[in-house]
Image 1 (spheres, rainbow over the protein chains, first blue to last red):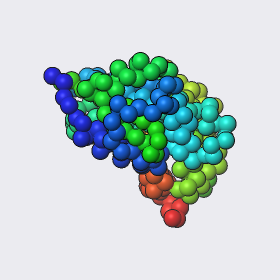
Image 2 (image 1 turned 135 degrees about the vertical axis):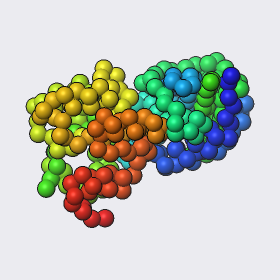
Image 3 (image 1 turned 60 degrees about the horizontal axis):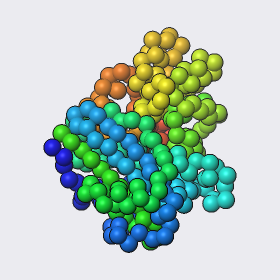
Length: 154
Length: 129
């Protein structure tokens, strides 16, 4: 049985993003995808244990560098910001995943998480993800569309 | 007393954030060593004097639980305090980790106060706000 967690996903993502990266997210209509959606990155973590599922985070490529910049507290021009942009996206997803699992399943169940995988995706894949009923869409920093897909089955 | 600290996490981003957070927390640091997984951490531990380990759980090659178990089997390493820093929110898992001998647990996302409190509890020294 697949569980829907729209409100929980919105609350957890907003809290983690603010706490970890000092960024603010608001709910967003994915049909209004801005132009920067043509070059995007998808990070995904799968989990197993007392329930199975996955959490995926799709963002414009430029958003990854903003994650790295804000999470590490560095200047945009710092070399490490560019070098660790995809790593930063994976770590944001890692924290979101851990917090989502506790928020939806509580503190008793135990889950094993995979290491985040990261890949570039095209506009077609972005649109498919946006149309998925398990996807929540956000606008981060008033500019960047972000898709968060959370699937949990018990 | 300044501490030799080992940071174990497969994310260089998080290692950088932990390093910065330790400085912000006012923890007295002699040297910071870094490892990307449990095996790299064991290699560093076998060759260097380390006072305190901060380690993630979910890592490739060798995860944090395996690393803690290996440390427990080694006379030179088994007394080194290990603080797990993870996204893990399962109290069941945290209790299991404590049964394995970890000293403390910090959940991501973390703040300097989390590190300061843990280090003060371990060293018994108040490092100030």
